[in-house]
Amino acid sequence: ADPFDQRMRQTRISSGYETVVSLQDLFLLFIRSDPAFLSQRNPALSCEEAEEILQKTHDFLIRATHLQHLKRLSKSFQLFSFSSSPQEASLALEEIDTIAKMQRSYLTEKNPDYLVFEYHENILLWKEQVANLEKLKQNGLALEMIMGGGKTAVLLPLHALKKADGKTLSLLIMPEALIPSMAETLRSTLLPLLKEMEVIQIDRNTPLGEIELKRLYDRLSYAVAERKIVVMSSSSLQS
Image 1 (cartoon, rainbow, N blue to C red):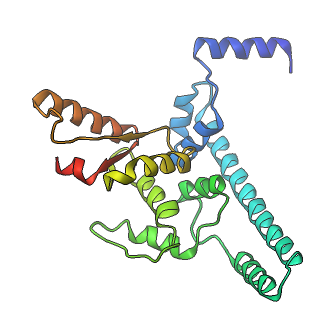
Image 2: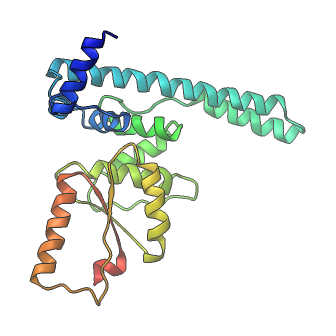
């Protein structure tokens, strides 16, 4: 690159006119799918340039997840070739058949969060998982699922992320004993999809006067505005 251009770019970054957008930031901005917000994040970008960047991010994720799918299929073929028994060979063939038949069952333009999640987790969402995510959009709906259906690893983080839209409080309630492990799991799973998560713990000894309640309200309001996921225990909610 031209030394003068490099110095000019460094000057724009130092002055705040141009900012460095990390890959995580780009994924967050892609999930919002708002070119105006991206150009606001980096004023040096016009709305047209921001829109082009978002489109290229989409194209990259499509190609990258397709390559991941092929690698998973290749790994299954390797397992089949190294099978040491008819039972292992049969299981490997079943896995090859399952992976080969899998197709994306949602519109990537309407669900950019699903696409980023697939890329980060190196998976392809099952058709049943996408259908259940659509069902969970209905208020007051409860789903009962068998073990291994992706409740914790897929549905919980994606549904919580969908609710964190800047207008709605995305609140996860779980037994207190599960909060440390679940909070860590969610942070790891949702790392590229949100900046941070809010864990609020309240017990009967927690002061809840007018000032404390105002602070709690402000904290929750800030979580809504910043699209944070809030985690609380059932006992904290009752307190």
